[in-house]
Image (cartoon, rainbow, N blue to C red; front, side, top):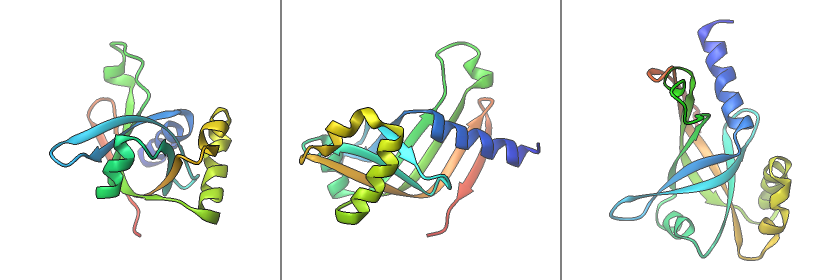
Length: 150
């Protein structure tokens, strides 16, 4: 397996095996970070997360739809310096409605069936992030870039 194939495999593993990501939004004067449950499409071009509309992240997204998400596999051990992998995902978030929401919700709930009641609440918004770029860091310093044209 070459480095490119290995790195893509690591990236896909991160995005499918991890359940939580750190979402960074624009809070005006400073960035704001939130923990979110997420799911991605197999090609990694779209990512989904849900949040109540009465949250800072929802309010921040109403003002600026550009987001960054961090997905990693750290275990909080010294070995993480050589073994952990982290992906920074950049993209544009959009709240989904109607048929698009139902299609995105199917992807989201396939990974998080325990969140069905949460996402069924009328106050819950489902967002799709159209992924523009992903930066994968392995071995604490090796960086691979993946760019997805619109």
